[in-house]
Length: 268
Image 1 (cartoon, rainbow, N blue to C red):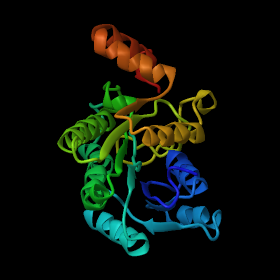
Image 2 (cartoon, rainbow, N blue to C red; image 1 turned 120 degrees about the vertical axis):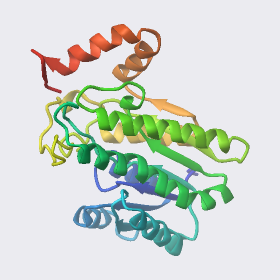
Image 3 (tube, rainbow, N blue to C red; image 1 turned 180 degrees about the horizontal axis):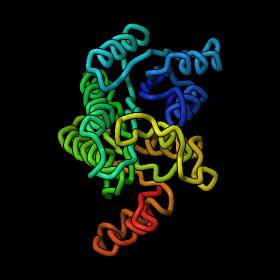
Image 4 (cartoon, rainbow, N blue to C red; image 1 turned 90 degrees about the vertical axis):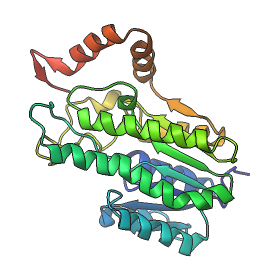
């Protein structure tokens, strides 16, 4: 029998990418799943894939506190409780600091950091009762600042620090708090990454074919939740980056610069 059968799992940003793959995994294991996204059409198509399954969809922008309140209230109304919360909703950006608009950085922080704070704070009373789990889908950018992604890095550093503080506060409560850094994974996040003016780029310069699939990434996350891990860093490149940055930060500066810049121009 699955460890997650009849557990209530809440996943933000579940209409595509890693979030959708997580929805797939948990439904297949008998969980009750609720997910939100700003795009209701994508949510509706997701729900259509699982007729008769315990899947609740809700249109919400996690950067807005009231949207998060409405989402969590909907979950409680439908399922009565929450066992696992996965803060997956997020947005990236690609622009150097000298060119980016401040509103772009603010938008990234509102979605990635405040979205995590809002949903966690609202779901926590229920998770505490169930000795449940809080997960933040972070990034290697939460361990190592990445050029052209200053706001994204700042938001993920903030998520990691906030969840680490929360984990320490709840260490004797029975609740597990975990943050996940997927590394480069096939996802729409690069296509919708914000440019300097806060608009979606609409394309990705990365070779998605060489990356870990969203389904594989979701499988690792589900397994880490089952084992109640503290952190999860995925892909060889991700693990190498975290290791190098910890022990050889100066050298890592040069390596990261070389990776993201060609002929003085940001290309990744």
